[in-house]
Structure formats: C-alpha cells, structure tokens
Length: 355
Image (cartoon, rainbow, N blue to C red; front, side, top):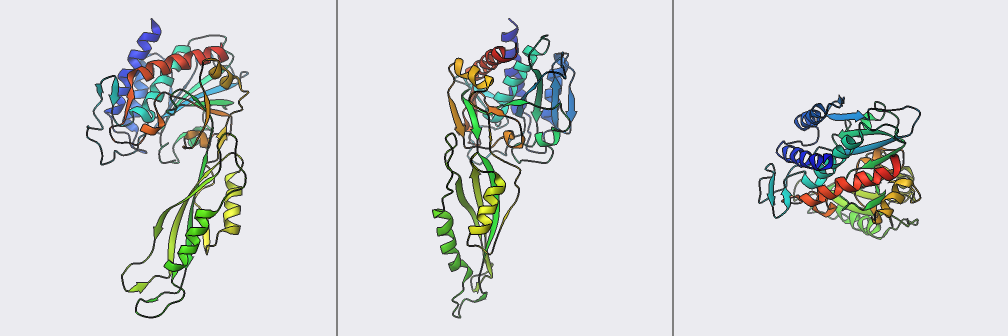
C-alpha cells in the first residue's frame, strides 16, 4: 500500500536527518536531504536559503491555502548524552538521535502527508509544505522570511511534538533586558546605594507581579527572571546589575501590551524588549481542523512552548507525533509507532477537511 511505503520512506529519511548535523543556521545538508525526497517523488520544489517548500500539483489561487510546516534545525546536544546524538539507533521501538522528537518525527510525517495528497484533484484547500530552518533560534532566515515568498496562507498546521493532540493555542514570548543602578564604590567603604542590594527588592517585585488577564486555554502570563549579571572584582561595588526576564504571554495580551505594562510599572532604571514579534497564537475551537481532530478522538490544550506558529498571523494548530517533554533532553528519542500513528492521523484529519 502507498501509505506503508510512505511510512517506511519517512522513517528512513528521519534516520538520515538525525545523522546529518543541522544546528540552526547550519541546515544546508539536511535541506539537501529534503530536496532529494521531492526529487524521488517527482514533486517540483523550491529552496530559499535552507528552507525547502512545495505546493500541491493542482494549486488553485481561488481556493484557501493550508500550510503544513515543521523545522529541520536542531539545538546542540547537551552534555548528558550517553548515546551518539548523530547516530540513528532503534532500540525497543524507540528511534534515538538528536532532532528525532523535536521535530524530525513531525517533519517527515507532514512530508509524507503532503506527498499523499500532492496529486489529488478537487481538494477544497491548496496545500503548501515548508521544511523551515532556524526555528530553534528564531533566526531571520526561517519561516518568517518565507511569508512574502510562498502563497498567502489562510490556516496552518505546525508540526511539533504534541502526542498528536491538538494544541489550539500557544504562548508568545518576550525577552527583556533590564538594569538596576546604584553607586559604585570600594567594598571597604560605606555604601547605602549598592546596586546588588537594590536588586533584592526588584527581584521580589518580579517574583510577586501578576498580570491580571488570564486565558481559558493558556492560563496566566508567566514571567521569570532567568539571568543576572554584575561586578567584575571582589573589592568593587558595581554601578549596575543587569537582568534578563523571560515572559511567556497568553492570548489575552499582545506583546506590545506586555512591554507597555512593564515599562510603566517595573521598578528598574530601564527595561527594554529584545523583540515583540513572537506573539501568542491560536485557532478557534470551532475551526473545521479542530473539529476534525476532536472527531478522531484527539484532545485540545494550550501549549506553553514556542514554535514557528509565533511568526504566523493566520489561525494555526500545533500538532505532531512525539512528546514535548523529550525535546532538548539527553538521549532524545521518538517511538517508531508514533510516526506511523502520526502519518495516519494527519491523513485522516485532512481527509475530513480538504477532500
């Protein structure tokens, strides 16, 4: 059967992707592997930097367009690995290797799904498949760089590990740099304006601050001080302390609103957002894609982790094989049967919507 052959080919591709390093901004070799898939399937494709994309054979500009997207870059392996992160090894039904779960399993499953529908006529939606680069570092040459290149997107499925449940909303992200000032001095002399001591009350403020608006799907905004830096030598009180604050934004706020609140209220001498582009994203629970997933027995939830959804302005659904809790962990893996199930569910979901 064609689906069995697609599954076998998808797993083989994933093994090859694992064994080909593809850190963010260094994905040229995995992009070539994805190109080879399209060549073998006789599907025309395009490559923009390290992003590889294609449209279905009977693309019709009068129809709405559905994006199928996942990324082929990875983070760097951590020091906890006991297995070779660049060796695709199958043990007890688990396929081990860097990028297997995040998000290689999703990528090859969506690619197989796109290939399944590529030649079909009379689809209700056009399909655009994008294997994107630079997702892990939110780079400038990732999916965001393609949005004026590929056809206009009306709705998207973004492949990230969700155990094939429906992440109907995703928190956005704003990272802030902040500074707490004081009076520099020699450590031996009295100083009632020590920047490090001044930081204590500032940290308490961040710890206790609560954004008022909660979200039914995504809960509260979560704000965390993640970095602190000050001082260069033991006998000198520094002039300032630098902080980094990570804010995970629900869909009750825009990133701009979060920045305005912190600029006005945070007890710092300066707090500046690095970027306001990574907004929260969602899809209405009444959308036909969500309804189709629920009909297949999938549950809905709000995701706390960031993905390429953040750069999309259209409704988007996060959905994919694998488990998010395995992402960026040592000895990363995905179950072979999760890929098999993922392809089957993707295909059945789309049949309910686009055929």
